[in-house]
Length: 194
Image (cartoon, rainbow, N blue to C red; front, side):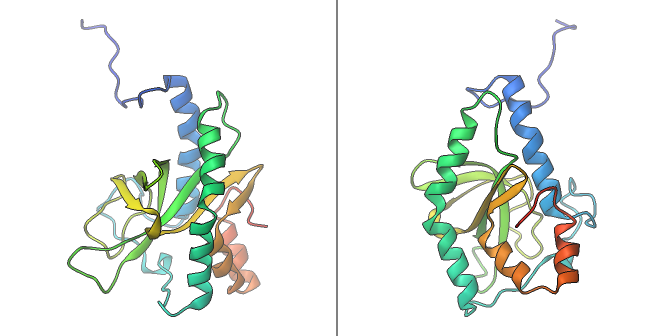
């Protein structure tokens, strides 16, 4: 008994440990890259999110509303690619995530759009693990398992051959940046947006 191996991280049912590791490495790299290089230790939920990392979006920003609706409309494309990749022995995609709107139940006025990894979809509800550290929302924390309806989805991306596919809101925000800001932004990612 004393020499028995102990599973420190439970492997999801239906996956071998090897498949789980192969799937986790690209996701971890994507989370780290989307989190930015200048943030405090991302493994700690005690560190507040840097206010500079939060980009305010107004509810009447029609371009952003359109980008988010495009993400919802094209979600079947995302899910088709990602769910197919989950079934591969050797994943072809370099990671995938969705972004969704979260708010505290007692605060109907404000919330945050945050990235979610380990995405699953049952036809009605999207489930995954919150990859961002909330800056204002207190009802969820980084690493929490979260679920939400498709209506709360605001963006998605997957990486195919070092290129981000999707990322509709990110592309819009990048288009509003100066060349220098875009280069600084893109330097935090191990893949290309163009």
